[in-house]
Length: 269
Image (cartoon, rainbow, N blue to C red; front, side, top):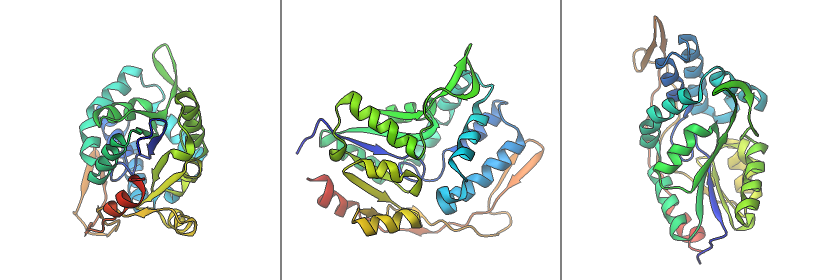
């Protein structure tokens, strides 16, 4: 049944795309002189932590908000636009094949599709456009005279902030939340998941997985490279300026797929 008054909302990191978007953002910021090698070291460790344990390794909402604002403070709007265009191909290459199929299936069912992410709006909007999605909701930084001040220019699109942004979008566009879908891997997105009628846990962390199973939500495991960090010297090395930033990551392939089952049991309704 086609429902023009419904939408599907996709978390970005580890849901729509594999891995975290913060690291390519940081690397490009360094290349453009907007981040130091020390920033790259910190973001590399944060990306590894996120890859391994999800939001449980990234700290509180206030920590994450502060990190976001610190990344863009002093940058111009044009700087951020350049970073967004530069990393767009990298983000597109990380989009999960299953995610692309879900986006297409929701469009075929007459639903709009949105990325909802704490990442800068200027980063996620071009990605949504490149995937043919309806749009994106990202965090907006305050801008004065074309430069980001280090303050928020709107709600922080994380945790409860995602749910609030979706509620407003539903009100503005006439979506019925009980007819909408939400996809996420993280317990931090529980408010978003509880808002809609069709929450779907994607490669969930342990906390979200437990809640999904307890409440009877679909749990889907997309094909992925297993999250397993190993200390193997020389496996991966990334260098920023004179300060070398290295990390090792061993990855093996897992091929569990329940997309077909999800399609039959949920999207076809």
